Image 1: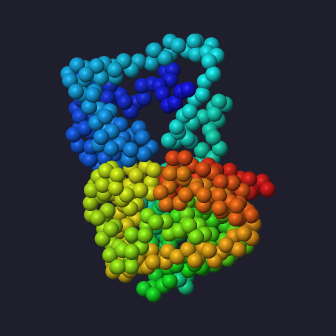
Image 2 (image 1 turned 180 degrees about the vertical axis):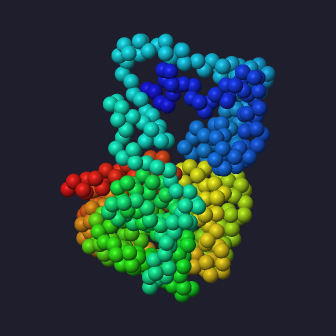
Image 3 (image 1 turned 120 degrees about the vertical axis):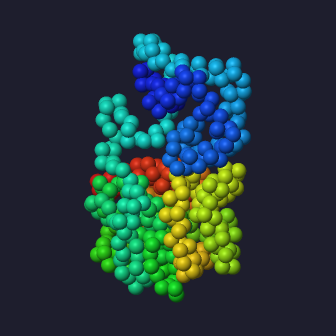
Length: 437
């Protein structure tokens, strides 16, 4: 069995050439010693986008506790002799060694399994050399400045609903969870914009949507708001995609307006009577006490400390919802949380969102879901702290139109953001099958 490794003449990869040069100069220890001495700073550098050794090799660098970093690196740097041996290891990176076995590999009859993790599956090629379907249409995901520049508002009875639009084709409406906004969907939109006209809204009390102080922000009212947005934009026959509380809102919308849907895609979300999850009950109590901002403000003020707490094993809000919390740069944390805490009115709306966590809203649509014939795909991250996979199968067994549950092994609640291909690949196949039907 072979996993990701050096092959034939395709190594050493260019990313490690600076390390080989350090080894040649006898200064390699100066790269790795700081990871032992100040792993907190290493995490900050990685979160800013720097390619920190060791960290960049994990999809979830959160596994790299201080103890694990020392477990790997301390023996390598424990004496001059160990450092010298470590440097000589790097200086042995010569692909002539694997080129020399080419003929032997071609004659190798040993049964072999190859398991390859593809952080960028669009770069892979099949045996024929052709790119995988849809890979050629990929661009770069929108940055925060572009997200702000593209923002529009739909004037509805519920408020001025913020949304962004990108792509062409049939309409796909994306509904995020808490405490996020439409920017959550940027990587997914990047991968499907050549096939869909993508609309990503900001829910009421979240993101940049503007509402009255008395506006109802319950999930049922959010579903009503989505219908109002579609009315304003003149859209019907949509593909609806939801995550987290946005998935519950999508279920309610589908129950009330099945005729407006072409398809439904649900990811990890609140289902029937299985929510709110116990992990969020302290946040609901904070909202009830009017002190919710004291939980989220420190993530904006000192995100470095939040990362340290998470690395120590604390269940830090937001961080615990990603398999790869390294995506949460300081800028992204501010993008999600600053608008929620930017005024007393915004804080009050954010707290009312949490106080609307009442599963009576989804229990009430049980009969409607049992009659829902809309083609439905369910994609579920299996490492989610909040929503067990049994709810994915509850949805499959309840909704007549449900066709499949796709399980995503290394994924948590917000996997559309840090594992977007895990959603877009089955979703594009699902949409293609709809077109062929």
